[in-house]
Amino acid sequence: MSAARPLSVCLAVLCVGRASTACAEDRVLWLHEQGAVARAPADAVVPAPVEAAPDHHADQARAALSQAREQFLAYAFREAATTLRVAAAEHVESLLRSERALAIEVIHWAGACAVLAGDREGARESFRRALAIAPESRLPPSVFPPEVEALFEEVRRAAVLSGVSVRTIRSLPQGARIEVDGRDEGVTPVTLRLAPGTHYLRLVRAGYRVWTGPLHTEGPVSPDPEIVLAEATGRDLRAQMGDPAGLPDAPDAPTLQRLAREYQVARVVVALRNGGETVYPPSAPFPWAWVAFGAGVAAAGVGVGLYFLLRPPPTLELVSGSPSP
Image (cartoon, rainbow, N blue to C red; front, side):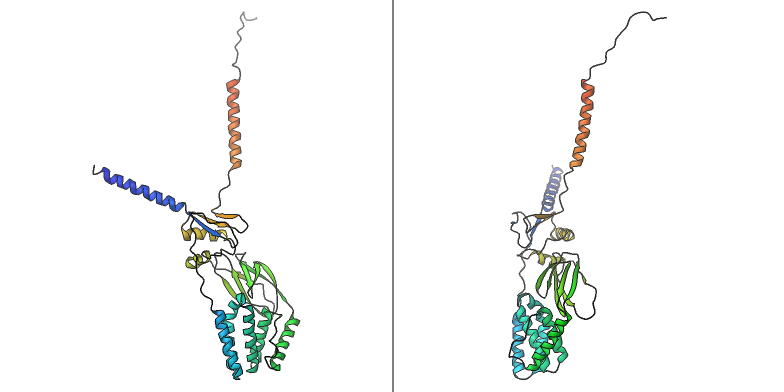
């Protein structure tokens, strides 16, 4: 009696352990592309939504612009130029995605204040940057002295004479969505016609860290860039998957494999915006060729068996008589 009870307890624990393992092996992680209309199954694992950090770039840029205008009216042009140069470095890249006009205004004011502070080379750099981002941009009329407008026109004419630069942007892996100066330009590899100057690149690929950086299109021609994306892991990976709007594109196979490990699931299902879905690991195709081969072998065996079963038995004919000499 005492020996049987521990044995039953061990069997019960073993059964529960196997049941829990089986449940874990059956878990499915459900994701969706932006624009997909399918709903997650009731029993699927759905990444927890992650709230985006508040964006204060626009407020801080407006505050810097207001401060610089006060310095400008007080003839403190060097201080105003410094204020706006710092604001441009810290905020313009983010503003291009949401507050494009504000970003250009900050750069224009930075160039104008640099002219009045005696820093003509710094002013040229600011004006070239504004014209690279928005070739159609102009200084606000009747705001700056003639010497500022004259230098801006000089830089603008030089940019027109330089013409556009054709660059092909590649990424590793391919298929990253690319933004140039805040504008969506498709997925890599992509060939772009860019105004001379410095441009802001942003590459996004599901399962990889967001890449941002400058692209210079003036001066000696350099090789087309190939940008290597780093894999997102842990918290970074979960933050991407938890975007309520969905993924920009379906993850590639290595990312799906990492997601299965990260969330400890047996399968990952991604609902696509075209109504289909991507499943990892993919289902093995049904072996129709082997089935046909087996059916053929079976049919041949049945045919041989029927032949021997249904053929008439052999007859034995006895002939009497004496052998001929």
